[in-house]
Amino acid sequence: MTGVKTLNAVLLPGIDGTGRMFGPLTAQLPPWLRPKVIAYPTQQVLSYAQLADLILPQLPETEPYILIAESFAGPLVLQLSTRAGSNLKAMVLCATFVTNPRPHLARLAPMLLRERLLAVPPQKWLARLFVTGLDVPDALLNQALELHRHVSPRVILQRLHEVIHVDVREVLSRCRLPLLHLYALHDHLILQRPTREIQQLRPDITSIGIDGPHYLLQTRPRECMAAIEKFLRAKQRLM
Image (cartoon, rainbow, N blue to C red; front, side, top):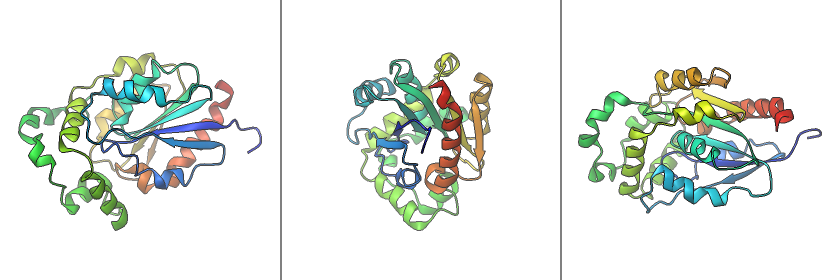
């Protein structure tokens, strides 16, 4: 549209890392946002720092872009922001966290986080209750469970350990990029404490609650894209 700068929208996925769940959101992107989905290796065990090293060369070198981070990717894009250079113009943090979002469960991690347990896809009713939301279409739920089968249990295990030990509060506090924070009002994975933590660390952040489950970008793509577009239009003069 006239008067709106063209931007690349680099999307980083949640814990499955495949990037194949972004279809509903990318279908809503306006013409002036060009999507680029970056996937993580499905069979290679990597830490947050190693993932950042892998992703950094894939970011646009000569064109302006934004980073859109879903869930697991929130700490990852914050780490990338310290190294990305001036072409990175803004970040969108969706249904995410800056420290372990469920610290009271950390004590149970040695018992729950076992490779053989993670090799078994969760029951559909559990996935609906705790992840996707009860009203998620069957096709979307089946896609999420199918993607689970393509990622090594060892990889998922490492990523869960990264979530347990992550702490990027200082990075968020020091970040001077325009930031949009989207959070799900019915998120059973990322509860209220992680959301309040982000808001308290950055009182100036644009923080918007959307009526939906943890899979916000998949189940409420139109509402998410409307919030992203409004935010970017307002911040264009700062870019």
